[in-house]
Length: 221
Length: 388
Image (cartoon, rainbow over all chains, first blue to last red; front, side, top):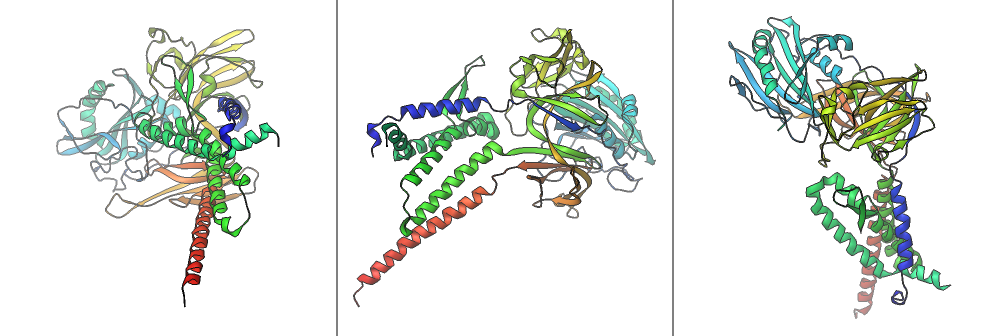
């Protein structure tokens, strides 16, 4: 062809400069707009009966009834929290069990023939906010949702090893013995970590000190 | 034709240019594939393909140098080259029709990718049962939103993208009665409770939660299932002086509010929002499994779509392979938490989604025509040559 005798350089460099200029303008627009107000977090409908759809007096089924947040999620691509995981030391009396892929840790907590389920899960972000998660937990023991003020008042704040836990202790009204849930939420590395002990009231009550001690062992690697 | 114009034409129609560009494409695909080990698929796409230049950041500085042409550069030139050659060598004959069609298809394919790259917007909408939203959220990008919450009916929002925050400069905007000084910006950081002054080097926040937390910068993450959580130290400066410094991060779970000249303002770092002229309410999530298994049978979200203009108000069921298309957006069922009565949709805006299909059909027909024409010619010749 002819181009051997001609220099394409001026055009190439003009093009190069033009594109560099365009490249610099990307994603730098400050926008202003009028937006509707964010409504308060939606109230969660109260779970009817026990969390797993079992009869209200049925003891929770380990690994099943004590569904972790997301334990009942569909098999779509659900991002569980990635990145470096937290480390912990569980009491010897807790038996590690194989959890679902959603769980970071899973233990059977047995006492006097009854069993509670300890689930550790982590999800990116704030997963809908603290209050929504607390109300979800309330639903799991058969309690109706509470207002943000009531929830905040029921929260216990505990500092662990570089982590801050928000802890709630919920006793259901239905069942004999009733279902009890002690849950702790911590934020680490942009992820929300949930530690949830769920089971019959006597077991959970007796294990509460061990659970709180266990939280103190949770730390960044 | 004058000399400059001829030069211009010959550069763009040359086959040499095509070959050089194809070699560059080969190289960039090879290097980008290897670099996926370090960056992951998303960052590799941004760095190598959806850019005009592959930038290389000098170690320990903010200066980035272009080191190799990026996907847009190579693809763009290839597109110009193809179009120019197409026009230059065009001849309307039956024999050439197949080639013309195949090339036109290729041009359309390249154009389609350009449109997708420039205009596609991927975001998500996460709803709990009973909740209504009229915005979608970016998967990764954050923004600093300054909300004037004074009016009880609506908020006046000024949204500042991460790229502007990263300059750590002074921000002024006609809608803001004050200036915003970004004292420090970390593209990824975590927060922990603790005395802020204990961390040397970082600015000290005086207002909001910033007075009780420490910000710990983290290296950027490129993993597909992680997001970076930026943090910024932001000082609000009014005409009569500073109002204080706040720490902002999506990890802050409480609103940070201040008053200025009778208006109530809120500062928040959040996932970048895209407001739409319609709203979606989640009415019900359904999640069925095959009996006795954990295998999902059906998961569906019943939503109510309401157009602000009042033209539309209807219920829609979104389930796998049955997305909702409205207002140029497509809502796919993405995640679901039946226990938490939560459903999330992936929301895709891609004005060019049809182009690859059309392009492939054109190329297919073009090739069939081309080969068919040659085959027919060949058969004719053979028949003619066969002695009877």
